[in-house]
Amino acid sequence: MTNKKATRLQRKGAKETLRLGEKALSYRKDLLSQDEAEELESSNLALTKVLKTKPILFEELDTSAKRVDQALQKSGGLYYHKKAWVENIEMLLVAAIVVIGIRSFFVQPFIIPTNSMFPSFFGMQPKLYEEGESVPTLIERGFDKIFLGASHYQVVSESEGPLYLKLHNGTPFKFVKSGFPNGRFFIFPTTLREYIFEIGGKDHKLLVPAEFDLDELLATKFGGTDDLRDLRIIVDQDENFSGRERLKLSERVVGKGEVAIAFDILLGDALFVDRMSYNFISPKAGDPAVFRTGSIDEFNRKLNLLVRGIGEDKYYIKRLVGEPGDYLEMRVPESIITNGTDVRKGVPGILYRNGEPIEGNIAFRENNNRTEDLASNPNAKNVLGYPGYRTDGLLSNRKILKIPDKKSPGNPTGKKAFFAMGDNSTNSLDGRSWGFVPENEIIGRALFVYYPFTKRWGFSN
Image (tube, rainbow, N blue to C red; front, side, top):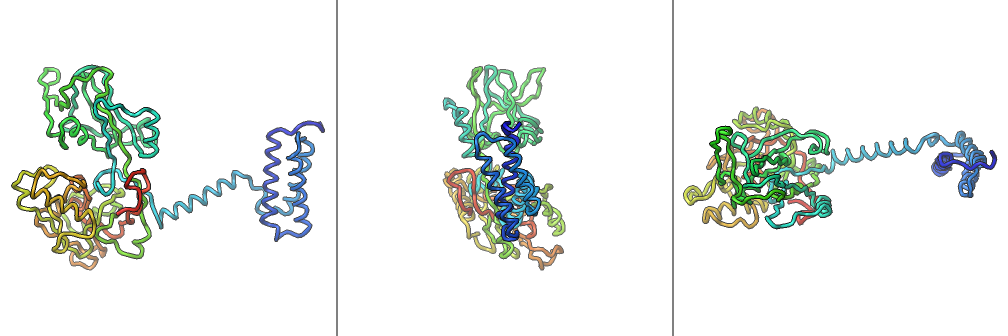
């Protein structure tokens, strides 16, 4: 019995006892009497010596560990008998409290899902692989996932024939619910867009995130346009499928096993939101602001605005274009109406604030410049990506909109109001449709894009 080696579990228990002994001595030395301190220190040293011997014998280990235990019973205080897992849980709880505090009062992470603020901020963006271009390997996809937040999608033909896109009641996709493995975090059900491609009479299903607009990518690849409506619709006259509508994407015959379409979806910009500044200064026109939408519909109802509303409680990011008391107006140049400018995504206009073209931010300047370019040449190239502001709803052509202050007549809410628009107003559900943002719903200002690692990484504008 006396020569029996200590087991791994016994050695582990003794080390835990020694850890607590050393911790209690370090933190309570000034509170202990000289005898208590000396007893705890000597017992710690004796157990340390036993643990360093080879082999470690059980009887010696047990005797030394019990001696430390007895010393701790007298002088360990709150540090005994507290196990390591208890301390780890306490540490995690403290860390969680710190994180929640930082998120609530200083900075909050936010991921941009849509392209309503493009090109200032990117939502989900596609990277298209052209015919003949090799798709990334599994390792390359891993790197793209880590550094760009990219997810790979492709349609591999299971038959041979031309490529069609089926229409669902006249639309190119339908929303579906999906769980594993396409759900959020692979498990939780989430809403996705379902596209059905037909090749050689066989359906090929493709699911993409609900926020991602695949329509424009398909229109660009197969029609050289930015609108699927430019592609030819095929209406079947077969007696079994009478009236079934499909878009003919390509005349080329896709072979069995061939990749009909492949692309990556790059994650939208992940940024930190400054929650602190607006506690000391008021939001300003030009700020890229994040706000909650929960009370916006009720706020605008009290202002008797005839708007469509939002109907959901989410976080939005838009640019503030007007402050309390401001007057906003959209003016469409006369030539826009007559020179053949494409107005399917809205009629371009110049945004005015208090009687002057809006200033103070690159998005203001470049959107107005784009409208002026289109007024001169409907085919003008869009170099910087700002599409030009579009007239709609509360900012119809030549309609002057006054933003209420908290003391404005007809404002029973007693709250300041702001007006927000997307920098990409051709693809933005914003104040033109649902009205004003009450000041209490504004969370903070976009501060810093921390992911993905692209040229947009850094402080926000």
